[in-house]
Image 1 (cartoon, rainbow over the protein chains, first blue to last red):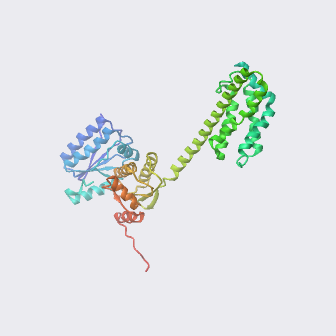
Image 2 (cartoon, one colour; image 1 turned 135 degrees about the vertical axis):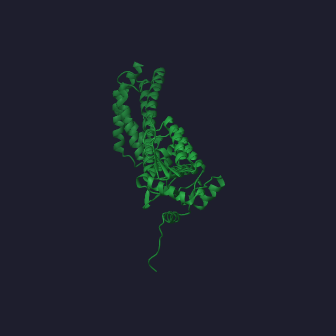
Image 3 (tube, rainbow over the protein chains, first blue to last red; image 1 turned 45 degrees about the vertical axis):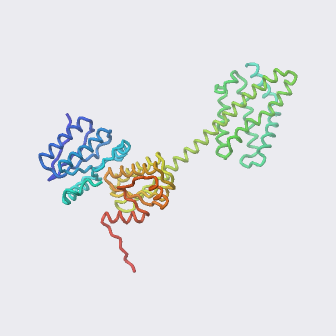
Length: 127
Length: 285
């Protein structure tokens, strides 16, 4: 059973997807991550998908769902390093990931999370 | 069929030169004012055609133009069509090359079989069928040559029209020129996204000054590109929206909410610099 590791970084969690995501892996990630946020009270989640080369509609939806779930648990999600092919595929599938914050790399994602954390509750989910 | 074919063969072999003169007469009548092709070139082509026709009609299967013995003649016609297409001839002018051979050939047939109406009719029909097929083949390859030219130009246009320019550290610009269709949008989107990843740029400016019209489809393509850029973690500004296009967008009811739009590329660059924390100031006077 493959699992995607979730690393704690201060008040934030870092999820790096290094393997090809299949439906099972995505579902397990959803459960692990929500449990982890609840346990640690993390304020932000960075999901690095720079190694992800392929997505289907299910994985695309899962990414959106995970982000929405973290939001409900009071953690902001930032999606990092989406590849051009993945972005084009998601747009063609009609999944625009509205409300999900994105950044080009981990550094900027971190800065984004820190900024929104300082701004308080209402700074996120504007788009 | 064997008879008809050997007769054609015999006539071509026997009266080739005579018909050649008649043919050249016909051709120069229609092409007298034409400077795209010289008389000597034309006569060389007619001579080669007759020689090839003679060889091809010597064996069986005159009705089957796809047969192996017709290959040299077909290749010859292909090359003629290609050169005609490049020289700028129209398709009917190209086909006339073959069809104008009918007159001298029919005259010859009348002289030979004038006393036998049935045979004359049969021979005429055979010759017509053969020349029609050859003519159609010429038109077909002429069109193929033209299409190849068009395809090549389209590809070149596609490559020419998608330059991604670096305006500043972290700011990319894409000046779009020409109509935005699905194929072009795809290429534009891919090259822009690729450059964003390569350079790590935070802001991309799409300038549509050179886009003549915006309809719902174009707007949808733009929206897709903007969404893809946003999902990758960069910002997108659309600039160069002319008054007419602004009017069209509103009249069509296209929703550009959530997308930053500016009138000129300069405004977009100023905004991008401001977002990145740069200030432009004047040092003289």
